[in-house]
Image 1 (cartoon, helix red, strand yellow):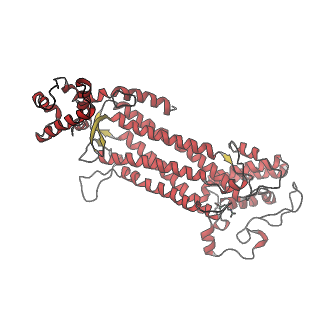
Image 2 (image 1 turned 180 degrees about the vertical axis):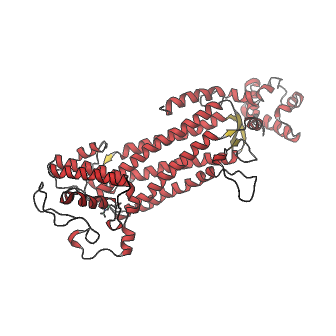
Length: 480
Ligand code: ARG
């Protein structure tokens, strides 16, 4: 890289001009890289996505170099203006990214040299690409987390809206995917609102911890220049500079945390996606996906496939894969920077793209899905779903120990099954043959509505509690 031999502030003294393909490493190298070396080494094809963060970091660094007198005001101004032009060029699609210049940092610096000449060579004073890339990526992940939070809130808003609409819609609740107890659709949808709320909490934790600046750690050991790391940290919206220069350049915990957030969220989305697939099947027939989110079959004319849900279910795999990729890359890496760490970007960019696509598709499905409430209601009582209510009634009204009540109810279920009936269809005589104290009043608790209304404990499924939970969820999660 350009080295200066004269005192700071002078605009001359470069011994090398722009970093160019044949000599980006200055005097040390006689020949450029082999084609295959360039191919494996270059990251510009993916790290160009860091351009805005790279330029912001460089502007903050240049302003600090000027303020501390490490470079002249004239050079600082020229650098800032040049960087602004480059930002415009990249945003306008006029910038030519060159593989020979390896990465986004060298591409920007090289163009800066073309635009402003020797002053460009002063930008890299007291800095290394190691602290530069760590800074860029922290800024990028921070932006990604902010976008993620917005996308999650949008999906939560859609779910809360549907939950409000279906606060009293009955459906079967399952354990082991077997009919368990009736629940309300609103309650079921709000379960996902809670999961997404925790995802947002994890994202916020990650953002808080990542928000420290590596800039000024230089290659690994800090610098002999009188830099002001607090100033650059402030300018870039970081809370403070990172405390240890070795850690600053070698830490990728923040990426791992982001990918962990993404993986857990991916798991949540895949669980919901799986339920949507089930609900949309002819066998369940609880939900109908609008045409806009369905696909047909090339051979079976009757088919409506919930492909978006299936793809979301699958994409959890690539999110978990991204986390695993980086965990394995980082495992056993000695301090400080290793080129291995360049491989952090591919999974993080892929995960961010996957998440925004999945969240948008899921929001669209949630907004567009319609529910067959009659069908769900009919199914809600199937499979003796009110058996627990019968057992509870025996405890409350006949003062039976729960274990005995469980046994009596089990016997009645067996009796009903043998007669191919629902529990509510058993005669009082039949019931009394098992537990003589049972009265006519028992039939009330065998109705799905009553079973639902009775589950009025905090966090329970009764329509009343679901309406309360909807109101609370709006306050807890929605800003609009
Ligand atoms: N492209 C590199 C990366 O993403 C930048 C840092 C390179 N540092 C180095 N010492 N070669 O990690």
